[in-house]
Amino acid sequence: MAGHEAVTAEPSLRRAELLDASYAYVLDHGLNGLSLRPLAAAIGSSPRVLLYLFGSKEKLLRELLVRARTEQIAQLTVALAAEGRSHGLEETAGRLWAWMSAPEQRPMVRLTYEAFLLSFSHKPGPWAGFAAEAAQDWLDLLIDTQTQLLRAEAEARATRILATIRGLLIDLLANGDNERIAAAVRMGWL
Image 1 (tube, rainbow, N blue to C red):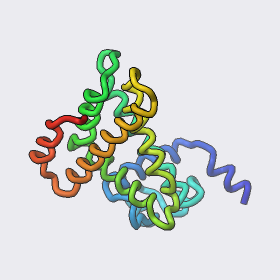
Image 2: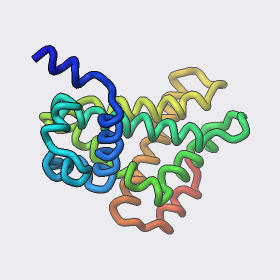
Image 3: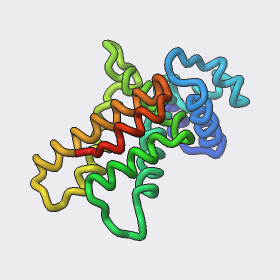
Image 4: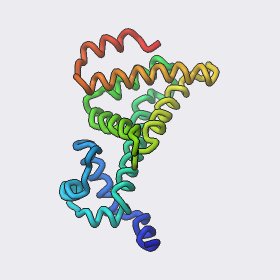
């Protein structure tokens, strides 16, 4: 069995291709109730190959969640950067909102929220800790814009803004009332 685990840890082109295809699949179909058989069929593989390359369904799911967090933060970091200058908290919050609420981000946002909720369950499985890790990623981005404040105050302000953005995103995903939500955003973040 130890030899099998060593094989699954080795990177390969096929493994990377299947991870990419699996990520695209979960963006379209979600995580809850994910079964290897339909996933494998959709991405041109077999459950056996997926288990061989990733070790288990849970390990594959965990890698997909890491990919979602990593990709989201990388894309957001690029979206927030503007000619190398730093932004204040309100401007960063506005840019964060604009990026997260854009229609092209909906699959990733939906996937992130699904993983958030699953991580709160009594048996969180592969998504254990996802909500806390992802929340810290976002908080760090917002805290880093407040260099003039003490850490405790910067964390409190970032927490309030992050909670507001999360609530607005849930509302947007739930009913798509863009005008009402846009009016709330125009009221400001602080």
